[in-house]
Amino acid sequence: MMQVSNTIKTLLQLLILCFSLQSFAVSDTVPEGAVSSKEQVDEYILHHLKDSHDFHLFSYTADSGERKHVGFPLPVILWSSNGLATFMSSEFHHDDNGRVIVEKNGSKFVKLHSKIYELDAGASSVNFDEEHHATNAHKVLDFSITKSVVGVLLVGLLMLLAFSSLAKQYGKKKIPTGFGRVLEPLVLYVRDEIARPNIGEKHYRKFTGYLLTVFFFIWVLNLLGLTPFGFNVTGQIAVTACLAIFTLIIYTVSGNKDYWMHILWMPGVPVFVKPILAIIELAGAFIIKPFSLLVRLFANISAGHIVVMSLIAIMFTLKESLGVAGATGLSLVLSFFITLIEVLVAFLQAYIFTALSALFIGMAVAEHDHDHEHDDSGHEVADTEDVRADFI
Image 1: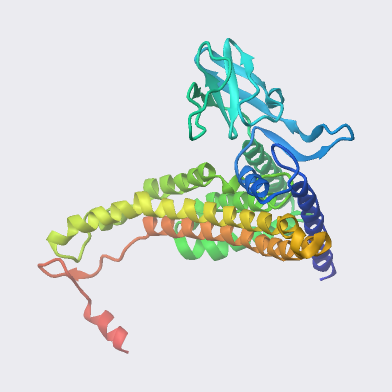
Image 2: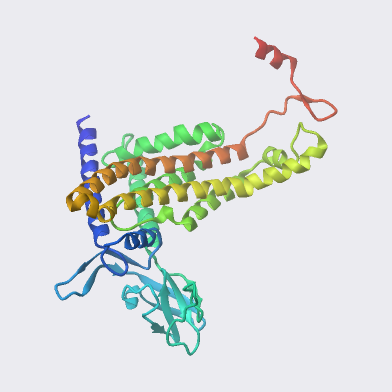
């Protein structure tokens, strides 16, 4: 009990520290300068939600008036009209408006709204139309190691180390020690409360590994997004779409004969209704189910980030009416409690995604009871013993 209490205290202390650092980072960090207006706050929130080619922790203004940025660059890997081009993101000098041109391998590159473009041949600057869209630059294949990619690799490495250690402990002793004692109840929870009830005793072991991977991957990434390092991996729709596609592939490939029969030619309904139901069931299996998985995770995590960042921004938007001290205090209190809720949401969204994936897989591998007789029209006729049992 004492160990659990100490663990909770440590987690709360880390949360407060991360929140304080995040507040400090927001208070003086935007792509172009310090936050001092509602427009710059909106710009920063949108900038925070996007992926980035570098880690930008915070900025400050030096005594000379020069803007200093603290962070570190990441590798940029592009395939342009002249082939492969590689360089570090620091060559853009934190420019996101196309003013800095990087020349590599005979091509000229600019960065616009967190995306990299290649200038047309002979162009020396970016031309914009009335809607601020580049007219003389085109997209390139971007294989860069972005901030989200770093987050995915980092979490994958942490999971590999943690669960490899847990597996080795099980090979030597029955009861794990150290951090393994924290992981074991979570593993058992996913197995016994998510995989087994939704998939069934016969098939759950086959899919438990995938469900454990998805659960811890999403959960740790969600928690990582609450730190001041600017991770928003599960708030990227490309990431949530990939996770949803993995689930789609698994339950599609694992679907048994009964599953496909109930999708393509539903038993027990009139023949003229079966083609209509087949279209609806196919849309549900290949569009609605994966779409619900990816949108739910993406929308909830993005909304949480927007709420937290907006509450922190109260210190700027209300400083004239409440004063600096009042606006800052209100911002810190509201943001702290919302951040506590986001810790719960981080677990909840991982649980929901994993539970829905297990449910979809369970529907695909479920073995239906074919001991019922059918009449000539295809309707099921319940066995008299079953009916008697129902009435009793």
